[in-house]
Image 1 (tube, rainbow, N blue to C red):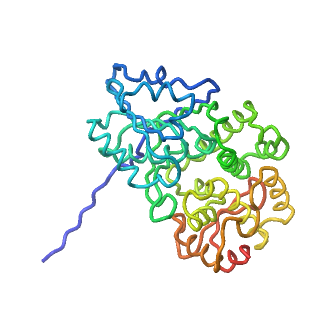
Image 2 (cartoon, one colour):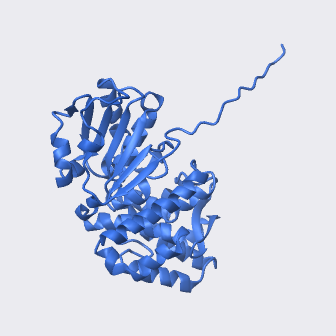
Image 3 (cartoon, helix red, strand yellow):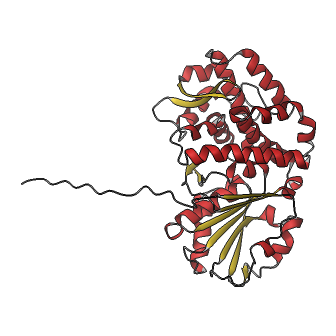
Length: 373
């Protein structure tokens, strides 16, 4: 019997919005007016708003959330989830999807995530899988979400105590950054977001790095104009990267600087036990220590970066303070081997020769163990 073969050609599909419109404002958020919440719209779009209990309780959100009667305002709906990393689960994603199905939303309607990185990630993920893709807009309420999580179309949730193991690429059509959320952030969450901004400075922006180096008093005191400038620079830098490499086939991988160490740290101590940016800052320190160990960068460069990091209280110790118990190095290796960025059995890291001089390299386990002593 003769065999036959066929070739079926498919167009390349970029899910989500083709363009993300990003707005940064120091005005007080007025979501009732901005979204015409509860009002009929010419295009018949319905909004499915998603936030968490912490954000919903903020003074600047109370009028908006109070306008919903048991989650209902006209044709729009609001769901309030629990707060924190422990809710970044597939169960939360499916809770959003189920609620939208029960309320007869269509794929032409729009999900709106109002919150930090967790809410941005799971709302966009829910939108991406709802009836094979609905619209999504994001309102990041933390520095981390403004400079990183809401930007660039990565969505997802944690799984089996590992970070972001399930997800999609699904850019939001609008990203609305209101800096008036920043004063309400706890100090550890504020510093967490700064760490992601500092990562961007080290990778792509020497002027931004100089701000972190020389303007620590203004930054630590949350000076409004300084923060607007930092957020703007981070959005611009990340935007240029993701325009060229949305699905992380090349240069977008650089944005993971410090993250392979960080995700392992978070997994070891329990997801949510340490702020993500705090873990990233520690991971950057370990990546630079590895660079010195392998003669990729100078000790002077590492020491200068560590000196700047100390101004923001970021941990640069070989083992972070929160990690205890035996076999620490081996526990890190095991967790790092599960990182989704690895392409072979070796661990793949973002490293630096110097400021804004980056490379991607696979490293040996023994080199990682060395800098975790």
